[in-house]
Image 1 (cartoon, helix red, strand yellow):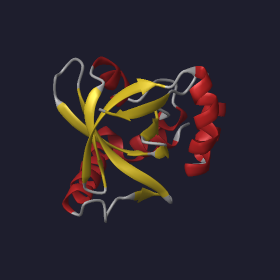
Image 2 (image 1 turned 45 degrees about the vertical axis):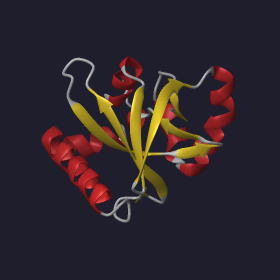
Image 3 (image 1 turned 90 degrees about the vertical axis):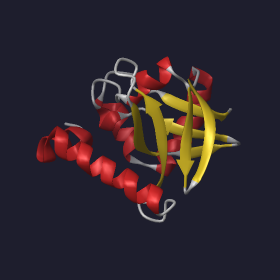
Image 4 (image 1 turned 90 degrees about the horizontal axis):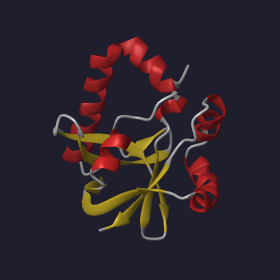
Length: 149
């Protein structure tokens, strides 16, 4: 069972959403001073729009850097399906991120196989559980490149 699944089961979906939104509010209010890391890994806030609902949402995500690009991983804790933010980004890839109070316009795209082969080890250095997540799931976990827009 994935970390996300265990937490969601423990706190319930509503509890998990409340925790996430409290994280987002604290991060924004303090320009990342609170909520800037998760288990030692850096965290950004990713804005996205629900592809069905049209609702504006924000997800706190672990990130890495690759030159001018920011990198996030659509791991969903190794679950069998993608996290909800990834299909939203595929539908509307132009968005913004908040990195410690610095709001940037970005365009999201999935890393091609060669890029993933180069970037994946860097992201496992940023957050080691990613390697276990990939071993646990049959899906190929997407690496998402956030390019400056």
